[in-house]
Image (cartoon, rainbow, N blue to C red; front, side, top):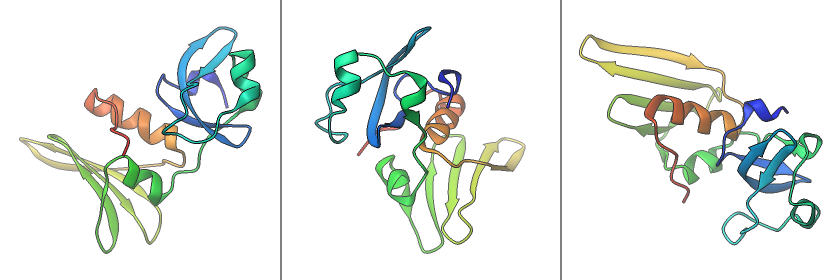
Length: 134
């Protein structure tokens, strides 16, 4: 995983612990050291105060993560609606789609999303907002 794939606020795995990216420099990636809401502290990364790219792994996207980001569950999918976009994750085939609603009608875009940071980045790119984390 490269630092160029990440944004501040992305969740990743560091030494198998959930980590929130706080800032990115030329030397590496720094994590959030306040882990009260995210999980166990990664002491090695905290003491070095720097996560090198070799310690970073993407978190697989799961239904649990989407629910934490505010998606609502129905029988066949998990969905999240904003003013202009409708995000949908199919439980059956585990495919992610985005529907754009405009005055001209609706356009559906299948999107290959496999990791938590990818859905965070897509949502921010389309809405200009961060996911809330429940």
